[in-house]
Length: 247
Image (cartoon, rainbow, N blue to C red; front, side, top):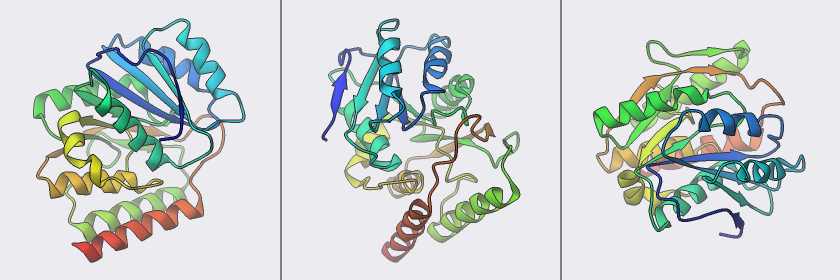
């Protein structure tokens, strides 16, 4: 992995939080404060793809306030899938790896106050993945236009039924992973973009790790514009079709 890592790498926290960022200067400082306010035994790992808006500099300022923040600066925008996988590898290879790893968006689409809810479900069920679900009872989506909701539903249903996956929401990125599952699956995670969400659930299915869901409210990003591109949609479809052929 070609990156610059800034911060104390020997922390021994129970929970690792991965925050992939690109152009999140308007959100990252408050998000870090909100996660810190939960008083979790956590390490926050921000993986920034050299954001031109100085997101990384703001994270470094927060490192002066909090001792549990790590900053990984990658040289260029390299995709959500690789950011999450790099984060997994860092935590798994650390001297004192966490028991659980949270992934979430850094734009407030995912409410950090729901992190304890994901952890509680993980503790109760001892599964491989807990998905923050928009599509089970109690879950919902706010501020998405009809077309965006339709695309999400179609993509989710396509992956779910074509690959025989059980969760109602296979494409949500707000999750809690057990380190035990990630150790078993990490060698088979190769996604570059959003298909990482399907790939991880498929690997849990193939390795007989249970996947549980807990309801969340997904709110369309409050600031900035969507990062979902045509290329990323194509990668999602290509991965799913390839996985079908291998099933």
